[in-house]
Image (cartoon, rainbow, N blue to C red):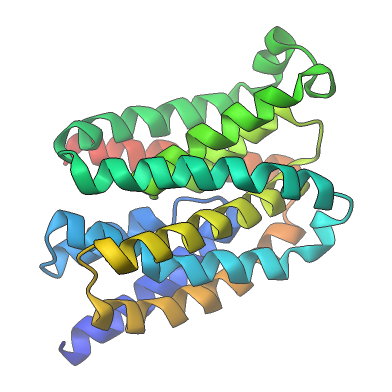
Length: 247
């Protein structure tokens, strides 16, 4: 690995960790970077998933103040998101990637629309506090399935889905997203380490950078007003989706 490639990975990891903590979707920075550096698609995907996992954990740790009072919720949801992640990881390892590559931009656009029209959707779905607990379980299972398969922009989908089913502020939902992202990351680390074609040299360089970025991003997220955070997510998801559609 050349010095230029190492610097590119460090810079990409730092930026991705920051974006993951603030809005989610940092893997859409590092995954294309790994492909550009010559890794095959599946190897880039699994190496990227392992690299950003520590950044998720760092973001969750740094966002502890916004997790106060959510301990019981986290404990009840973790088994569901683990099962979803294992299902998604199995799909990645045993099915072609081409179909999901086609779907990803549309999932991102859907996530952006869910955030942009959050109030209108909430009025149609009813108040989040009135939603059955099963709605939350279904939402995190589907996000775990997505995260286990592709990972990139999983945070965006988590925030969009949780915003519809939970009666919480966006900051608290963002902190919860970081915890669930860390759980998905830990699950994929175990799965891909055993079964996936991991490039460990890439992981060794990229992972520390995402940890640093995750800590910085969590601090930024705690200081952003709710509306600024919401529209940051909307704009970022839309831009990335358009780029993927055009490439």
